Length: 78
Image 1 (cartoon, helix red, strand yellow):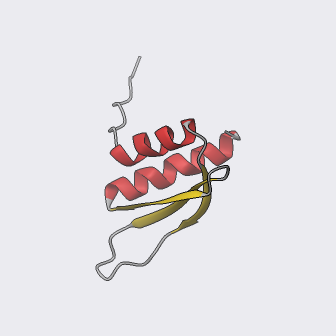
Image 2: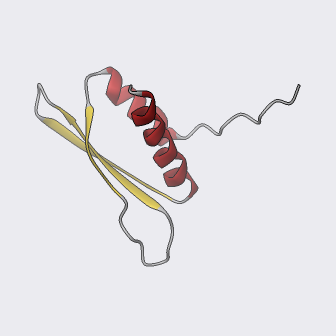
């Protein structure tokens, strides 16, 4: 049986999950263009009841992993 290598743990994914647990939801996702062509993602997260907002910005390999993670959330309906 072939086992896949474990996915690296990224702080941004852990932070996003912590925010979800306390009631935050994704408001908007953007993929801004960088001058050097490095991948980037910006996730605007809001807590509707308290009207609090936070912006998570990530670059490089971690941005790609976070993007895939968020896509998987929407595809599984979580």
